[in-house]
Length: 83
Image (cartoon, rainbow, N blue to C red; front, side, top):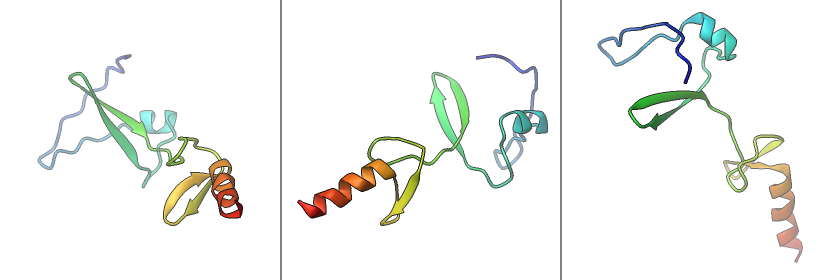
């Protein structure tokens, strides 16, 4: 991991502010979701991307019964009905 040299204090509610420079660089907008990971004794934040529940693909997603699936997996599901 590369240090940015930026430090922030945690407030009374456990929040920290991500500096505008980092949000701009990583294209993090207001209301974007971030995933939180723990790696050893480090906390890692990653911009959340929806992905297919079957194969993990993040492109061409379709909502099917309140779940995100890619078009390839959707086509496979449709073909199962025809068999």
